[in-house]
Length: 308
Image (cartoon, rainbow, N blue to C red; front, side, top):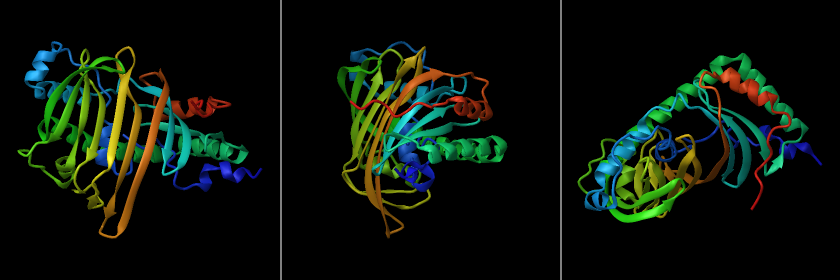
């Protein structure tokens, strides 16, 4: 069998880093995927009655929790991604210098000899050229900053209604429906997307973390994010996170299906599903070089997840 079919270097559409934290359309998707990385609030636990009376204080506290730093709690995990029909599996290691990834499977098949060696060579090159990782770290930070601004606007951008408690991934959670707040005035084009969005937000009762954001576009909306265009009615985004141990929260599922156009001419069809698993802590002092050495030592690396 020709090994080139399993060679990620022959598939330029695959991003060898983790796409996220809310993918190529950054802010909305990053805003959605970056909702999830901070220690929980120590505020008094909300009650169904208090949330039914006024959900906004709960949303505001949850948004504040999502904006807190998680730099002291790096983790490693496996990422299974379907992006416009292309399937990849990666090992991801979080570090103070940004995430580092190793591609271990393509099309739900382990890499063949050529693809395997290409990954080893790429990681060794990264080890010898810290400027590559620094460029990535800066880009990740810029995306994170834009996403944080979107999160800060969540309490004011929507009108919320409590639908009671539901079983969340880490315990009881408040289920809130949301729809655009007509009194909210977007400060920039990135925030204009909120005016055409409705859906649900779940917030963990005990830790006041956002555990599920499930929204869809009810109108065509404009967006910025450096590419100026329009997203069409009917698109959807789903993001879920959970406590993966010791109060550390991580995203475990992300699904995006958006369609539109950019710069009046280019058609946008963004269809991505990401599933994260096998979470484990790593040293808080690890730099990206430590992550590269760890990934290189995984021989053979993890394969694709079992199919249900």
